[in-house]
Amino acid sequence: MKIIDCLAREVLDSRGYPTVEVELTSENFQARAIVPSGASTGEGEALELRDDDKNRFLGKGVLKAVHNVQKEIAPAIIGKEFVEQSILDSLLRKLDGTSNKSHFGANAILPVSMAYARLSALENKQTLSQGIAKNFGTSGLTLPVPLMNIFNGGKHADNGIAIQEFMIIPAGFSTFSESLRAGVEVFHHLKKILHQKGLTTAVGDEGGFAPRLDPSLAAGAEAGPGSHEKVMTLLLEAIQMAGYKAGSQIFLALDCAASEFLNKDKKNNTEYWFEGSSRTSNEMIQMYEKWVSHYPILSIEDGLAEHDWEGWATMTQKMGKKIQIVGDDLFVTNPEILKKGIDLKVANSILIKLNQIGTVTETLDAMKMAHQAGYTTVVSHRSGESEDAFIADLAVGTEAGQIKTGSASRTDRTAKYNQLLRIEHALGNRAKYPGKAAFKI
Image (cartoon, rainbow, N blue to C red; front, top):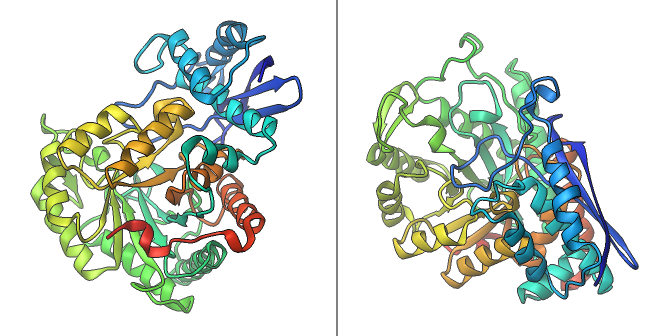
């Protein structure tokens, strides 16, 4: 496939901040891709290049990244033939020449890589999920179980709740569409419950509700003891009101984003400030163990900070056979860091975010390594998303088994669910849905 044109432009993400869109053109087709952006980021992520010009978009502009596509990347790929994804991605990495893609910016490199994946699929008369499946070596028939973020906290809200995401997992159903319907119905019943309690039903960045459970809580103040359990109780109430059974049909999951509530008064990475008190790694683990015994929690993501490797090892040893323990900020979709985790027996699952590593090939490499080690994979959106539904096809093509793409509101989130519904419909009776088996516990 020969690339005959490469264009980049500044477009808007779901938070109203600029991001980069790239269009690649071959002799027969054209394909485009938009790169997402995260709010809660791990230190090891590939660099997102911003302009820092306070006179444009509060310094969030991406004209530098657009320039790098137009003036650095495009001349190197236009007129060239690429027989597979890895060759293009290898060239992009070589042109950038840095370990974290800080020269061009991952937000310049990734949309080129994503657009190539789409263009390659078109050239081969395949859907994107089929193209990824061929590259990854799967049948591409398995739909992912959705982890639906219906209550937001942390950096995704301003309600005093430290934990970033409270999710429901409708895993006890036989098809993806049935699972999605159940999750949507729980979402709407939670809205009714919050309304009845006089709480706001405004939504956060990822489409989940973000009320201040204690209306008297001052802006910026942290919610006190028991506040997080109150959220989980609300979710269980919504599940019951929707007519489903918690613990058999619908489960709970948490994305703690614990690096965000490290005790800033301490200089180590093992002291946390949570619900108004300082806690050690072991005390956090004990709290999670208590929660798992009281609530139908199937998965905990980033329960400890990204540098608290000893704590992660302890948590995995104590809880790894009971629940899925997901590394996000810990692994940042990086095969080298994941290998360290596998060697140290840390976590049993990895969150997959394309823009953490910066190319499609490196993303697939991380997923292959995880699967070979028996780790589960959870394909994930970012808090700053777009109408681009690439991750839906990625989840099916790699048969990841799980996807995190937000709540049942905001078009930037439902775009991914709608794409999964299209894929399920196209597959017909060949479509598979793993349900709880996707969690391998």
